[in-house]
Image (tube, rainbow, N blue to C red; front, side, top):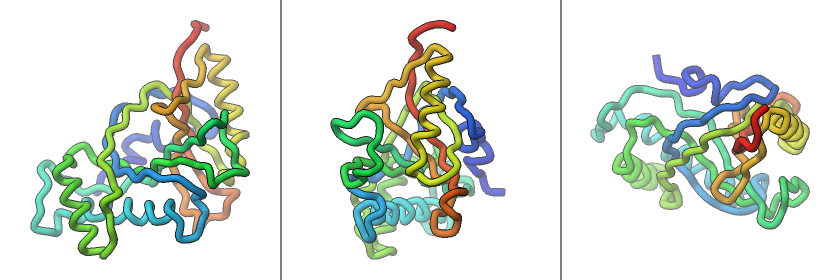
Amino acid sequence: MAFDFKKEYKEFYMPKNKPMIVTVPRANYIGVKGQGDPNEEGGDYQKAIGVLYAVAYTLKMSYKTDYKIEGFFEYVVPPLEGFWWQDDIEGIDYTNKSSFHWISVIRLPDFITKKDFDWAVETASIKKKMDCSCAEFLTIDEGLCVQMMHIGPFDDEPVSVALMDKYVEENGYINDLSKERLHHEIYLSDARRVAPEKWKTVIRHPIKQWRKV
């Protein structure tokens, strides 16, 4: 049976819909960086998603090609994730989506190296007839975070974030959002097939301890 990150690492991909504190280990990702409204039809965000999946599935299916990855085992492509921020705005202004900066990512199994990644970018560009050169091999170490499952539209996320903020404060932590530690979302629903009120999104914020409770 193929390795499934969501099932093997439930604490990171399938939290309950109430806040919890976790320490997220360092991991490698396919990443594409950009700016702008993610809902823009044919915009940079949607193009970035196409690149991510082209590279991700090239790596997943590599065992059926002449290119062999050392230590390879079959796996399910992990869910799409995103890191988000806006310049000079505290929190998030959902009414001004054009000002979003984002890093869209898909997690990579540990056995995939930069060399394997470079092969996949080149191969996907040729086979899919699309420029995948914007994809980057990223290593992200999130560390101490608060997270919860948000159920509903993205524009309703402030309700869940408020619950996380309250939980953090009550347990002796503070948010540690910065240019290096960003608002993080993991998308577990197919927005094309699931009604917005049923969308499942993991929301994760970096935190640090400031007092003992």
